[in-house]
Amino acid sequence: MKKLIPYICVVVCGLIIAIGAEIFFPQKETRIWHHETEGLEYCENTKQGEFCTHLPLVIIDTKGQELDFVTEVLASMKIIDQEGGHNHLDGEASMETDMLIKMRGNSSSRFDKKQYRLTFVDASAYGKETTNLQQLEHVSYKIMGMPSESEWVLNGPFLDKTLIRNYLMYNLSGEIMEWAPNVRYCEVFLNGEYKGVYLMLETVKADKDRVNLAVLNGKNTGTDYMVARERAGDTSYPLDNFGTYAGKTYNELGIVYPGARSGRTAEQLEFIRQDIGAAEKMLYSLDYDDQKIGYKSAIDVDSFVDYFILNEFALNVDGGGLSTYMYKKVRSGFTMGPVWDFNNGFDNYEYYSLREDEFYMITKPWYVMLLRDEEFVEQIINRYSLLRQGVLSEERIDKIIDDTIGFLGPAIERNDRIWGYSYQDGWLDNLDMKLQPLDYDRNPENYEEAVEQLKSCIHRRGEFLDKNIHVLRQFCAESKVKEWN
Image 1 (spheres, rainbow, N blue to C red):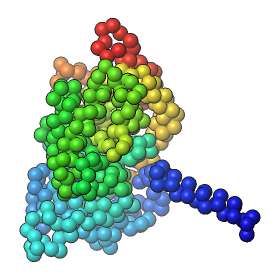
Image 2: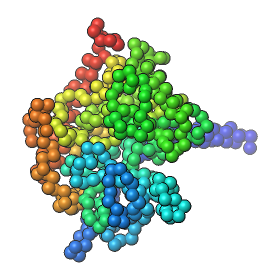
Image 3: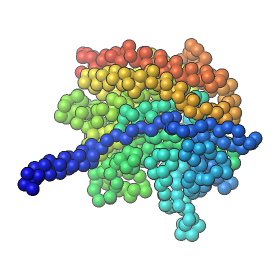
C-alpha cells in the first residue's frame, strides 16, 4: 500500500491541476456553423400552397397589436425545428413561449424588412398579480442548438442581399475572440404573413454562456461591468467619463451591465465612471506606453488587437465608434468587444462607397492612442499575418460563402420573392457624390451579382491589408511634431 501512495498522490494532484485549469483557464468551445449541419435536405413534393422548409421555422403572433420601436408588446412565439427533418406551419413545435417583442435597429429602421428584439417571459400572471409588462419574469430556452437564454434578436438582412455578412463575421469572430454572438438561420412568419429569411442572434449580455461577468450582489462597490459606445442619446445610462469631457473620444459611452434589473447602486455607477476615467487618463497621457503606469496595465491587449483586425478586414466603418462594446472584470483589464453588427461591412454601407485601400479604425476612440505604441502595432501585424494563414484565409472564406449558399438553397428564392424588389431600388446609391464618387455600380441586380460583389470586396480588402498592414508603423514613428512620441 505504501508503494501506491506516491502514485495516488500523483493522480490526485493531476486531477486537482486539471480541475483548476478548467476553472481558471476554461477551454474555448468549438464554434458551430449552421451551414455545416448534417442530414438536412430541401423540401420536395409538397402540396401546392403548403409551406415547407429545412430551416427552423419561427411563428410569431402579436394578437392584433401593432409593433413599433418604442413599446414592447406581449406576443407568443413557437419554433418548429425538427432535427434533420422538414418544418411545416402545422408541425409540432420544438418550443413555445410568451414573449415581449418590439422593433429594433437604427439605420435599419427605415427598411421594409424589420428587425425585432425578443424577450421570453412567463405571462401566466399577466392581468392578475401585475399589469406592468416589465415586471414579468424572464424565462430561458435553448433554441436552435444555442445555449439557453431569454433575450434574442431576429436580424432580417435587407441591405445585405447575400444574407451572409453578419453570419460570416459573427462566426469568424467567435473563432478568434473570447466570445461573439451565436447565430442561426431561420424563416419567419409574423401574424400569418411570410417575412423571409432571418438570423436568430444571441444578444450581447452578461451571462455565463455569453459575456461571462460576475453576478451583481449589491454589497460591493467594485463590480464587473460592460459599456457600449453609441450615438448620443442611444445609451441607457450615459457616462460623463474623462474621455468625453476632455474631448479625447466621441459619441456616447453608456452602461450595459449592471442594468436597472440587476439592482445596481449609485456607488457602483460612480465606481464604473471613475474606473474608465482612470484607464483613459493612462492612455491619453505622455506615459501612455509605460509598462507599469501606461495602458498595458489597464487593458487586455489581445482583445483590442483582434477587434481591430476583424473590423478593418470587414470594412466595418462603425466598428470602434458605434455598436461598440467593452467590458471589465474586477481585478482584470478592459476587454474589447464583443463585436456587433456587420450589416454594413464589405462595402455595403448605404450612403457612400468605402475605399478598400484605407484604414478606418485608426481614428477610433482609444485606438488613436494605442496605434502610437510600437509594440501594439507589431502585435497587430503579426496577428493579422497568422490569421490570414488560417481563419481569415481567402480560400476558407470563399468556401464558407459557397457552402452557406448551398445550405440556404430554396430559402434564398423564397426570401427574394417578397424582398427582391429592393434590387431595383438603388439602396447602395451614393447619396453624396462630392463625398466619395463611385467608380462602379454597387447596386446588384440579382442574388448572383450580390454574392460576386461580396467576394470581390473580400478579395480586394484582403489583398490591400496583406500588402499594407505594415504601413500602420507610421503611426508610432518617432517625430518632433508628434505630441506623444
